[in-house]
Amino acid sequence: MPDNNVKKYRESLMMSKAELARKAKISVQTLDRIEKSKAPCRMDTKRKIIEALGLKLTDKEKVFGKA
Image 1: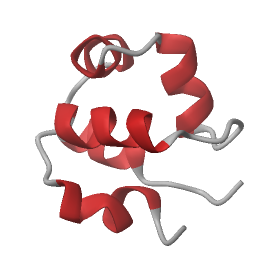
Image 2 (image 1 turned 135 degrees about the horizontal axis):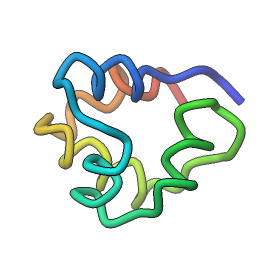
Image 3 (image 1 turned 135 degrees about the vertical axis):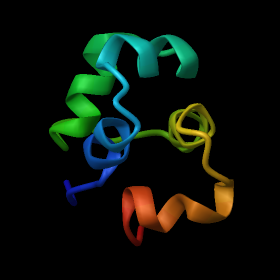
């Protein structure tokens, strides 16, 4: 699993895992696994996280790296 920058972006916004998970409509457990790069992340979940971080979908590579 390649590393991602979800945690870095979330922390830069001073947002808790619970808050980001709620905004993205995913579970805290799912977010935790994604931040730790322990689980593959579906495209739909990536979209939800990017939008919940207040970013544009064109920022996908900044958050998740190259696929």
